[in-house]
Image (cartoon, rainbow, N blue to C red; front, side, top):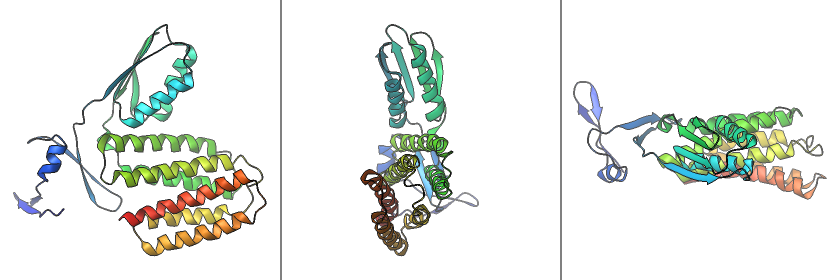
Length: 282
């Protein structure tokens, strides 16, 4: 959809927003929209004033702390802004510890604003509109790249901490998409998902002594870096990433490693190719 820029006042320019988008976003005259710039220099216009989304649930002392933590994480990613958790017979210490660890360790912007023996209130105290989705993805790219470097150097001691950062940025990216319904959100969600899958596979394979020295991680790292050039729609690079995938798969086949480890390694190079091929949608 094209829009012409016209002169507005002295030295300023303006454009008219499509009525259908304004109506869909629930905007009216004098409302505010948020402007940000993508890594490619494109202007992104997002409707602000997203409605608060509250959720309540009742639990008890018998519920697994892990389950409570996972449920908080899901609410975070799906865009809940006010979360009330009630315990019919009071929280256990391990449940409260899990709530605090999940909020502070995985949910950027979430804060515990009320905490008693039977009630915890969690609120989003930030403006999700200020998040730059492409910067989140580039940060994930950087951390995953560091994981590849660790594998190449046979020093995997820091990968566990990197995984925590990756999960945090992944959840933030998914939350942003669910709240804002960002332009081309499916493509960006798919890349987030691929990055997390690659990171999970690296974390698993880093614990396997039999595959640490198989000398293909440098090739995977190069393929990974190229994939993000392909992600911008460069067809020549997308073809190169696909060719590298075939070469890496051939090397994996000739290594004497277990079937499951082979599957994990194949998953890494397949997901890297997926990132590049998402550029075809441009």
